[in-house]
Amino acid sequence: MKTKDIPVVSIEKNAYRNYVVERISDEFFMVVQQGPVPDSAFNYPFRLDNLIVVMCREGQGELVVDFIRYEIKPNDLVLILPGSIVQLGEHSDDFFLYVIGASQSFISEKSMKSNIQLFLHIKDNPKVNLEQKEAEMLSAFIDFIHDKLVRVDHACRREIVQSLFLGFCYEITAVFQQKMDRNPQPQSRYEILFKDLMQLIVAHYKTERSVGFYAGKLCLTDKYLTRVIREVSGKTISEWIKIALIFDAKSQLKYTRKTIQEISNDLNFPNPSFFGKFFKQHTGMTPKAYRMS
Figure 1: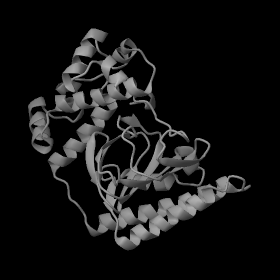
Figure 2 (figure 1 turned 120 degrees about the vertical axis):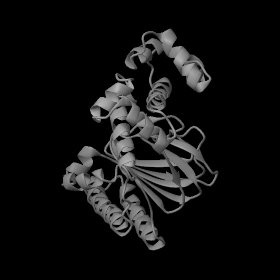
Figure 3 (figure 1 turned 90 degrees about the horizontal axis):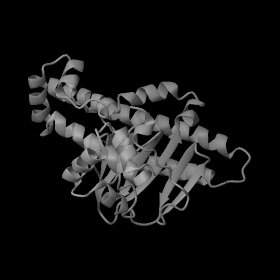
Figure 4 (figure 1 turned 135 degrees about the horizontal axis):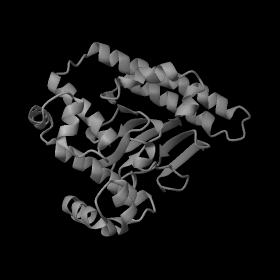
């Protein structure tokens, strides 16, 4: 799936009153939360074109990454890879986060390519709970980066922040690697198939809606794959495809100026009327009503 399929959301300086966002152009940003997460913040799915690090400071909440829901609590660290589809779910009033993001070019300029490759095996396990000492160390690191980021008149501000973020990424990589080595989590054949299916759905949901297509890609029969996915996830393959379509439709309705017909065409529905009926069936609202809500 291309990045344009689900709109990329940038965080503007004044987008949310409870945030202070410091940035270096469109290459790097850091969100310092000054109050509870606003109800409007990230309520709708969007695609990230950056590497994002989220660290929970207080409270509890839910984060949906590539349609999988994760429970987030204090000292949880979530590493979200570029291209992931993200949505903030329900959360407590005292949900406080650190959020740091960097473009792929900002990272690769400092020879992060090999580190990014290390991150790829984290894609299926993006969340880790930090020990208190680890949380304190990373929090101090974040504060240090922030101190350098806010020096907007410093001649070498970009280079300093870039180098510090590289070190921060290596610290995160070490934490994830240590956790995985210490607590290996063997996956069953069924769990591996489910994750393989989800990757295929993320890549093809706009054009491929049949179980047969995905079964063929995995070299399995329709019946066998359907049984496995229902057993692992409690949902059918068709239900997961519909979830992906609704995520995309909601995002385009909220974050683009496309007409409903254009969105219908983009998602390969036969006509806007069919798209409208599908959307209302799964959300209880028409596309127009959802856009205006």
